[in-house]
Amino acid sequence: MDRTRIPAFAEAEKRIYALISRHDGLKARDIGERLELSHTDVNRELYRSPLMRELCYQDQGYRWHALIRQAPAHEGLYEFSGYYGTVREFRALSGDEWLERLMEGCRRNGRNLNDTRGLIHSFRDCRETMLTLFDDLSRMTDGSFEDWETAFELRLNRGRMIRVYADVLVITKQKVFSLEFKMKDRVLEEEVLQAAKYVPYLEIIFGEGYDVIPALVLTGAADYYDHVPLGGTDAVLPVCSGDMLFNVFDEYLNFLQA
Image (cartoon, rainbow, N blue to C red; front, side, top):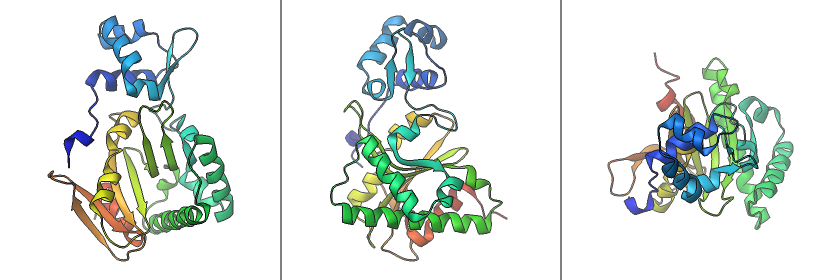
């Protein structure tokens, strides 16, 4: 992978956002004292960092707030998602109910809904794949997965500084699965890179308590599961057909471990 395509965030940015996201409003002075950073360094990050301009805001009392909190349930995530809810809530909705909420959320967060016919088909295809995954989990686990959070059509581009358009997030206790869906039956390198490119942003949003696992899901394929190299790096990314998505979760969460 071309490393120039991967955003690099300063350690100070990560620490400042993590602190802001865990409190209800902090002034720059308080942030500096808690993190042992100079007032100049804190202000530089708060006012110049694209990350801060996208994910934070300052109130009239000069206190800084995060738009998405780094604690479950992740307050604020709803505002950036076409649909957000627990797995239990998602499974309880009919297809039409879910689609109506998804479309409403997409209009709220600025998602382009042109080419409606093909887009709705892809939304329904994604929903069916996720329902199959959760049905598999219900047969093979104790059901605790129903408290996981789900976010469909996450769009983060408020300040036009950072662009994150993720198809589906599944947030477990310690991991965030970022799933890129394609209605295809073969692997394309650019789509593997697309599946991986939001990881640095998601690591900031969710914090050091979570591992972010990207995966590419090919719903036009069947009985397929592999690990594909990420460009010229040693890293690999899981790629699966829709009917094998359970295996991605099992690999990282060890449901079937003896």
